Image (cartoon, rainbow, N blue to C red):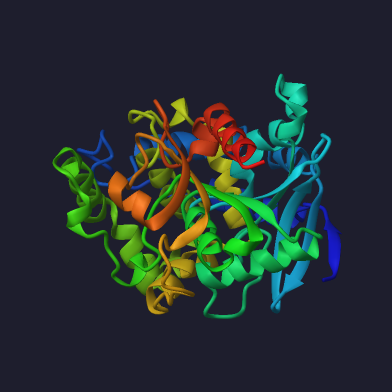
Length: 386
């Protein structure tokens, strides 16, 4: 595997063109939408765009990203970008961190240093990790993607090849959202390669082609979980319907409008986080805009949205029928405002659960919302497997 050093350096012409678009952005009427029930609140979006125009500094964030070493390689004909930092300790554990949508690799920024150098943060150097954070195929700098058929199954296979190419025959894995599903697929198909699998989102691997959790797994005290899941898909599943059926139609609109792209991503950051309706209680304006920038500047929204289409149009095929289906040792962190939840009987049936934690706060973006709690849980789980 040929690996090349990669430095993030966006051409100034791209930033200038973006500024022109932001300066000519239109503000559309909005009313009766103070609680965002119709979608992104235009008043807040306008405030955020005004900050983007006048105060946001991409070069500052680009410099922060470049404080870490980045690399690019090609696996199965696909460009793969990854951030890589080795740990400081007697025997660091290799750890693959997989992100989701609308995430980027940079959502793990608060975990990189304490994971790789725990002693510098008051921890035990025995807990050090070699951290590898790839951008999913078609996301961010893992572009351009020109092949169809790339979904979470093929991505898991690609990530095994990436870790093998870095010299790791066995590794730990953690993920959220798509990253959690990729991690579960690793724990199913590639259990022999995993030290353990840690994640925060739990779904049957055949969810995207109709798989569900049988109601027999829910006890009387858990019926609220089933109701929560149904409400999410009924009230908040519009993005899923579009991205899993006509992602290119959506891409043609959002890849031509930075404000439109910002609106699409912003709504999810607010709705899916434990922010009580105040998105800036969890993410700064800079956090929000940097996420949008990593999609905009890499022209990757369209191919990131196709990840849903590919999952929905390629039925998941199990690699074995053993139980639990996810055989690798599993650590699960449950955050109270995660958008979907599952009954404990099903969790214990589906995963080889060795560690389960219920957090006091946090939502879908735990690495940004509750980095200290997530850090501690990752460290505790993998320490228990040493």
